[in-house]
Length: 281
Image (cartoon, rainbow, N blue to C red; front, side, top):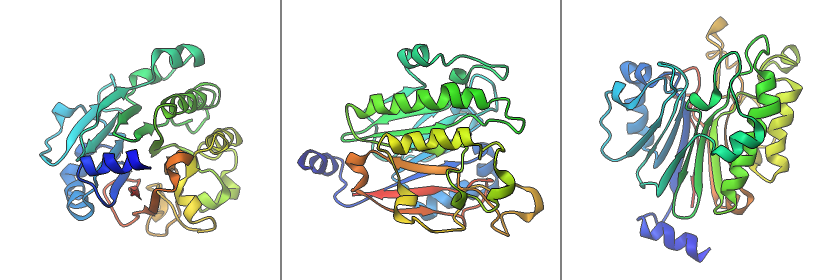
């Protein structure tokens, strides 16, 4: 614990750091709406992880001098992509899976393309922990990408975060594109077997918990209903809070005791997802 405390004092943090994750569904869109700027002003995250940025850094008009920025964009223009903004400069960033993970788990392309070229994973190393953001591939409405999820991607991602965890505790976040239990979506029964709530996707999420990672929001709110992070645009779903919890912060057991105040910020507009946050002391 002494080393962790020294690390925070070195960076000027003697109290808590606020870590946020948000699938913005296009960073240029939330900027043009003014919702991103409002969010930054009101929430002032110390570390902000974004998914589905749909842009390269040069395409974004953004002036946030308080942050160090790192974008990992998809090769395909206007698609997928992740980013990390941090007030504390990371020691280093790693984009995508390392080659040994790609080779071991055969993370190769499918009919939709190569997931390794879609800007889906960034690992940022800080003084006493890793932060990883992920935009997990969607299984698609016809489940045509479910085999990629079940047989390849989710296994590879778990192996990767476990690999990183060998050096430091780890916090990972993002749009995992799965509701874990029936408590995590408003209408579980009619959605059983549909993308985002198949037995296969839920099994792979359980693998993270079985490996010792802690779902920070559910650990603090084991029975809390109506806590969602994504809503379809159809049928006024967000206003009626007919949603899904598919955005998460998970923590290594070694650091989970330092994590507190996990929150879902459903009042933050601009995307079909809302931000989720934790604090760490």
